[in-house]
Length: 468
Ligand code: ATP
Ligand code: MG
Image (cartoon, rainbow, N blue to C red; front, side, top):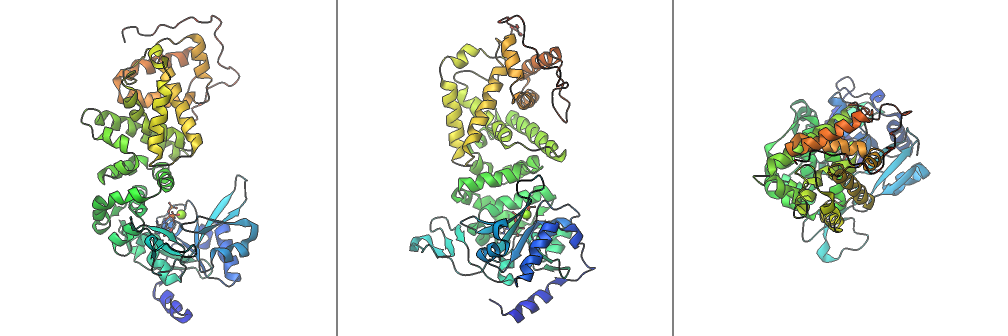
């Protein structure tokens, strides 16, 4: 660890002075500024770090603000009191919350400078107090709470473009790894030895892909080459963390590009193994990819238009082809209209749905409520393609809160699979009959004062394309 004097020299050597950089306090969230100020007044160092500084260089509006400090999580908690909560075990950080539970709620993530101390192996049964612990079997850092000074912290950041620190009180940017140049030349370059850094934390491979897709930057060969051989390390990452990472990768407005890159690096198999074997299948693969691309484009567009992305919908789509395959022995759901008596003859449909979702949860652990929600969407979809649609059934489907989502889903399915077109056309006709119009944006029923009418003649069947 450097002395205070040496830290000053270290900082001066990497300083970009006011006027020579685009960052200014007015571009930083007032809450993040206040976190830095308060920590400073309490005698600690504090900087705005990571994505926010990078995004300002890219002329983009930062999505959130991270602060790095030499205060320990407990000290941060003491300074901010009830506003602060310490979270995480593997990597303890503090969330300082402003406007709690209001529409303006903002969380400033405060991390303590990470140190460079040697890690203890899990084989040596580390004490609870051990701060840096590496798994004997996978080499992954399973705990990293060894704290240090800023010069150590900069070595622990993932990519040069994410290792820019901003001091808003002095209005100075510190560029420790040539991140400004890399932003200019659009490079994602890992800090340190790529093999070591991926071993410590394989999620960095996914992060490289995420930033490449989001920022439109290319990954330098020394950063990308090891991914082809080290991808399997992702098997050692907890399924809860994989789920969180997946959400960041696919629900940030760049799902299509991200998925393409994951395919290029052969990583889908570690995240969605069942889907992966379908995509690489010569017969089915192209159609499934067409479907997924429509889903990704729809999701990306939704986010661009400032509409909330929906993780259950996305997972329902990603796993739909797997469910269809598993259910094929009973009914072929990709063949258009279906005979519902065969679908519901046994409870097999529920068994298959549960099995698909539970198997996937081993890789990306989603919250339990999502399993029920995804099943709800799937049941609705299956019901939308039954041949024996009665007026009553139609009315009940139309009033289901998930109907709109499933109508979109059906559009994607029909877009990729001509056999589903008659089902879509049938529903387009039904919507017209009921005077319901979904515009591309708000996608809500047109007139609230004209609710969907309950049909007067019960049990009358609408005959749909018998030839199918
Ligand atoms: P985003 O715009 O997605 O928030 P970000 O760069 O701010 O991008 P965060 O996940 O918020 O990403 O992390 C904040 C900073 O913490 C990163 O910029 C990086 O410096 C550091 N960091 C995060 N995750 C890792 C990791 N797995 N390994 C090393 N450094 C990391
Ligand atoms: Mg961030």
